[in-house]
Image 1: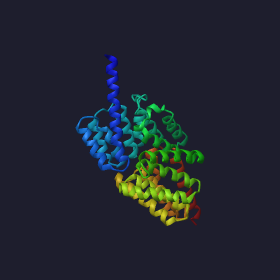
Image 2: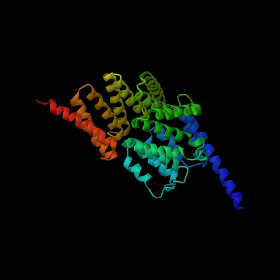
Image 3: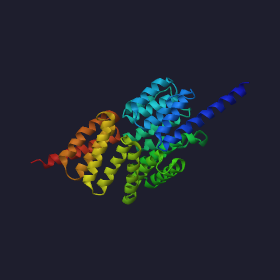
Image 4: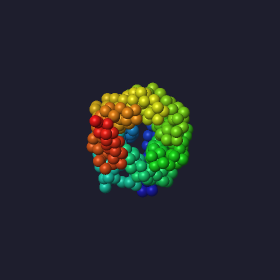
Length: 343
């Protein structure tokens, strides 16, 4: 009887995972309306916790609604709930809060949802500029036996590959970065389509590699395609701002300072509108804008960008984070230039 009960329980769980996978597919392809309808139907039927809808709403940057869904779910002790709460905090720039969840001794890292926690840890390490640590966290995810990473986990697999792509670039491992980025884009397009959400994320990561390789035409094509499709898909969204900021870095490298300023400024303004004021993510765009001003010798404007952006980074990431230290170095260099130019 016990064995039969275990078989029945496993079968029910497999049906649940299959249902979740089916509900994910429309919105991963960009059809958010069908995704929302499917979640409503399943929630009304009592087939699955409401926290599964959080994944789609995070993509849409409906952060307040995500908080409401997590409160309604109520399973605060579950790894799945904690994973989504940590991802929500990270996306809204509350790195300290997300890190607090990830360091909890109560998390069950044997749970399949703990795989996603590894990715969130990697994302936080990227934000702090701890690229070797990020590399390790994303590799932990990919080393998990394949039986635990089925179709339902493919978006996180792609996220992990994209994270490795982004971590390898500043480490100088461009061949490895290209390999991970190409693999992620191929998997995303095969599973959900040429301009699906995972594919667009992979296009952005691969564009960073092309920029580092000085393959400017390839970088420009990826950035333009990604920006165009994201704008059609989302309208106003942090991911639109992300690709605009990358576009600013491309334009700076290409010698188009005015276009770079416009894109960095647009990214900053969009992020401030989404988050209701200065945030970690808007500060990053502000620092990119400062880099452009510094490159064209507009020291006063560059100084203002750094002076306003660095304290936000320090508060969000910690004063000792490598990314904060590098930002301070850029700020101090500008201040030194200004001081030397003063009669």
